[in-house]
Amino acid sequence: MRHVDNHEVLARLIGDTLGALPLRRAPSRLQARVLAEIERRAARPWWRRSFMHWPAAARLGFVVASLEFVRLAIAGPTWLVGAVRFARLPDALTPTIMTLQAGGRLASISVRAGAELLAAIPPTLGVCAAIAVMVLYAAVFGIGAAAFRTLYTKP
Image 1 (tube, one colour):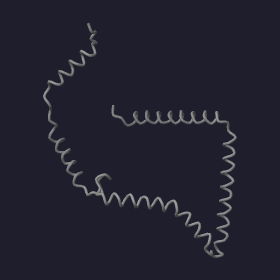
Image 2 (image 1 turned 45 degrees about the horizontal axis):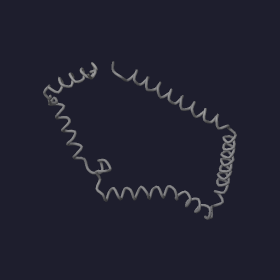
Image 3 (image 1 turned 180 degrees about the vertical axis):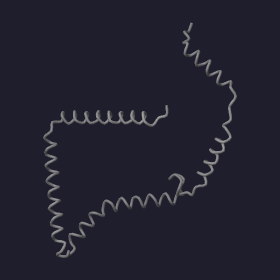
Image 4 (image 1 turned 180 degrees about the horizontal axis):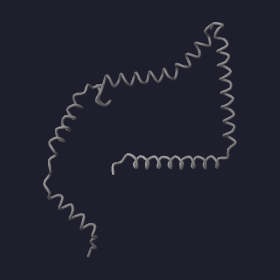
C-alpha cells in the first residue's frame, strides 16, 4: 500500500476546490485601461516599436549603419593620427604637440610600471584579492538592497 503524504492530499483538495470555482471577469475599469493600452501600443509608428517589428529594409539599414559606425570608430583615430603626422602644422601648434607627446611618453611609462608591478604580485595574492573584492561587492549590493526595501516598500 502506498503511503499518501498529507501535503499531496491538501494540494489535491485545494486544486479541486479552486478548479470548481467560476472564472471571474476583470473589473470594467481595469479591462478598459488594458485594452486602451494595447490599442495605443499597436497604433505606434514602426520606429517606436521594438526592433523586430521594423520593416526588413529599415532593420538592414540600421545594421549596416551600425557596422559602419563601428568601423569608423576603430579606423577613424588611426586615420586622424596619420593625417596629423603628415600635415604641415603651423609653428604655433608645435609646443602643444610637444606637450602631448611628452604626456604620451609619461602615460606609456606609467603603464609599463603598472604592468611590472602587477607581474611582481604572487598569483595567490591576486586570487585572494579578487575574492575579497567580490565578497565586498556582494556585501555592498546586499546592504543597498536591504536599504531600498526598508525605505521604499509599503508596510
